[in-house]
Image (cartoon, rainbow, N blue to C red; front, side):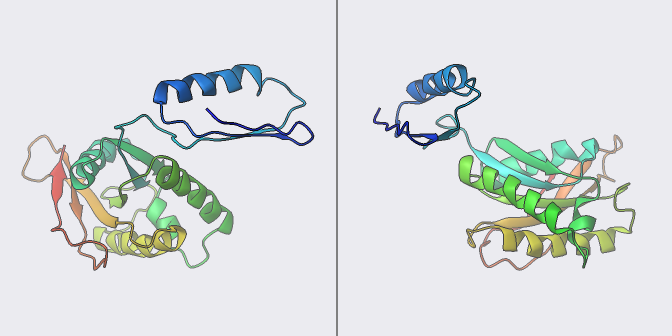
Length: 202
């Protein structure tokens, strides 16, 4: 485990670790023995941020809990990934579709997206809106327009221009008497996507 410390400056630790167990133990050591030192500035650069074999995708959308399962199931099937990194806000796509969007909001959103893409190596991004939305109380057609506008905004925040960004809309399954929610892709031309649109109900 090669590393270098220059005590004349804030401590910077460079590591290259292939073994996940060693990485985990080293992280615990740093937390317990270095970060607790109040007068010491520390930066730790990890090559691996998640356990081997763990796969992620990114969800950007509304906070409404009724939609989360359907969106997660859609992402798991669409990207063949297990864990969703979920970024939510009430009426998220309405916020992103504004002409005068808050730059601080955009900056914070980009930070979260970067963590998901760069640290968790997310396989793709879902952006969703949904029916019966309290945060964006417009008709479904306008809501879908907001989702598509949000895709364009998020595209500008992603460094990897080949990253798949898929717009979806979540609504009640009218064919199911239980009223389960179903996520369906909104038709959208994306040069990175050559697969057929899907739909997934929970």
